[in-house]
Amino acid sequence: MAMYRALFKAYGPQHWWPGDTPFEIMVGAVLTQNTAWVNVEKAIRNLKRERLLSPARLRAVAPRRLARLIRPSGYFNIKADRLGHLMAFLAGRYGGSLTRMLEDDPDELRKGLLLVSGIGPETADAIILYAAGKPVFVVDAYTKRIFGRHGLVSDGARYDHVQQLFMGSLPRNAGLFNEYHALLVMVGKRHCKKSAPRCSGCPLERFLILQERQGDLPVLDHV
DNA sequence: GACCAGGCACATC
DNA sequence: GATGTGCATGGT
Image 1 (cartoon, rainbow, N blue to C red):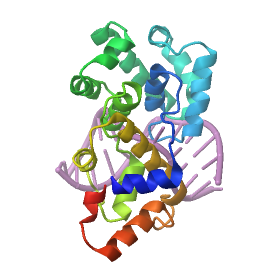
Image 2 (tube, rainbow, N blue to C red):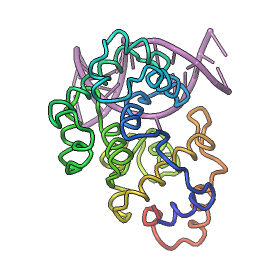
Image 3 (cartoon, protein in one colour):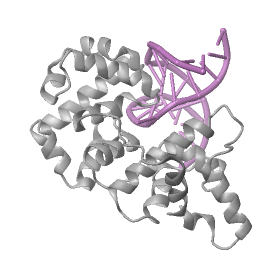
């Protein structure tokens, strides 16, 4: 919790996920795969303009048209397919009711989502945390990079391993997981870019240096 | 013009 | 299990 508090103190609440409705959040989770958020916003705007942001409408739209509308978010053919698979899953398992899907047991929902082609662990967890409001920790590229560079996880650490690091040492609280992940993205964008040789100047770095000087607990206890 | 961004599936060894 | 590749736009 100490690292979280250091980040929250520095940046304050992030009010995530950027999206008006659970359905918009779910669609955004797919569209943002390996893609800058500004590009996702353009695609979402297009879908809103065409009044397609509902399970029934999105399921009914022609794949070619969908691909054209989400073009700005990149990988548009693949993502159109993935949204199609997701809508089929929603219709098939939950009768097209987003509410029923989001109220499902989170472990069951996660297992189901992972069977959908195009939904991996991060996308599934983003949907469960930010659309359903259930406490799973979302691990993304920023999380791995930040913790990797500070020597808190090994370079090639697997998704589930990093997730366990957080979920094993934090209280199971959706609001906390929400804020923590959002704060890590903020740190990643500002201080831990891929192109820079290492993270520098972030609140996390200051915190870790301070801890090392005091030299009592293993750093992981501070997650 | 290179590099990068809130992944994932699939092939191959 | 590990590693490599295709998918693609738009900002820096």
